[in-house]
Structure formats: C-alpha cells, structure tokens
Length: 260
Image 1 (cartoon, rainbow, N blue to C red):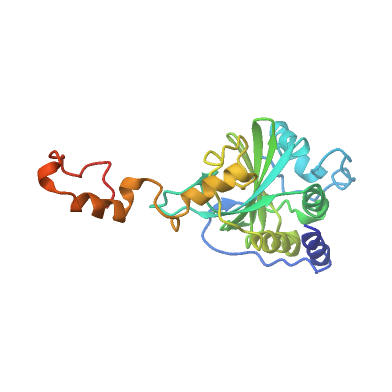
Image 2 (image 1 turned 30 degrees about the vertical axis):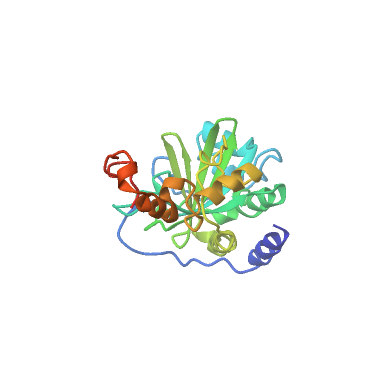
C-alpha cells in the first residue's frame, strides 16, 4: 500500500485533464434537481471537517445516510467491476459484474482516497455534461451491517454513490488525472474474487483470510483430485472387474448423482 500511496502522490502532480468520454446519453453526470449549475461558492470551498471523509461539495449533495457509512466506515473493500452481459451468471455488486477483488484498504489507503479524492472540492464540477459511465472500481464502505458503495468511472470520470435506493452521480471531469491514477493503481491489485459465503465471512470482502478458508479454496480448485471415491476412475475400474456371478445386481449408475 505504501507503493500505491507514492504512485498516487505522483499522480496528483499531473495537470488535470478535461478529456471527457462522449457518446449516447446513459447517465447524467449530475442530477439537475440537486445541482443548480452555479459555481462552487466560497462556503463550499472551505476545508471539510477533519472528522469527515467527504468534502463540502460532496457532503452537500449526498443523503446523510449515504455519507454516514463513508465517514464511519469500519472496513473498506475494493472490487474491480464491469457491465454484466445478458448471459452473465456470476457475482454482482450494484448490478455490475464483479471481475475481481483489489483487497481491503489499509488506514493509509483510506487516507489516500480521503485526501486526494473525497476531500478535494477542485476535482468536481456542477456541469450537467453527459457521457457513458465506464465502471472500473467499487469501494464498499461498511459500517455495521450497512454499507455505501462508491463506483469510480474512467473514462467519463465520475463517482456514483449507492446506498439502498439512493443513487447519486457526481461529475469528476476536472479531476480526471487523479481519478485515472486511482483506477489504474487499484486495478493492478486485482485478484480472483471468491464468494464471502463460501469463505465463511460475514462481511463481503471475498478475500482468503485464514487457514480454513484457504482449505476451502484448495478443495474448490478444479485442478485438485476428486474428493469423492465414487468419482475416481481407478475405483470405477475395480468395480467393473468384479465377478458378476458373485455380485448382486446393481441399479444403473445414472441420474443426478452420476458424474461423467
């Protein structure tokens, strides 16, 4: 994570770009009912409360319950995501396909996101420009059994906050360089996502944490030898070689419990 922090520190030195993906309208980068299109006021530019992860710009636009989970998060997990195709049957988060896990953020990692992304008013815009959101990273901020998800899009740089039925999208085009650097850095940490339920985890991290979970992963691996003896070719061959006259007639090996 120290390496990631240094990368992000270098990334913020880059000039902010205005490259904004163009295309058919899919998402309004800002909701007209919550963003008036006016310039950021002096009050909004004041430094955010030290106890808050969110800048005044974000705090003024997010429902209190959405912001609360971020400000009071006990754990923060990272996932790589993409749009789910029509025939996709894998794991979803906010109706997006989970393509991998980028781990749990350390305190240092959480502070990097706070300082260079969430707590920087200059990264966001009141504009109502439209573009096609390109989902890349979801950060899940967990507080108790509640959580708020933050989708980071690049290109079409934006942040989308999910909390229950509340969905708020913020234009982050002025901070394109920072957003892109964060997406690229966390994407390099991508590992295979494993179901938290299979790993016996109560919080949806999808990361192998202990020896018991590693044993579950080992047994689930398709490269491992069959666990059940009746799925062993050598055992099946031995059964076939037994004298038919001395063996009671057995039912045909077919049906739901027969593996081919």
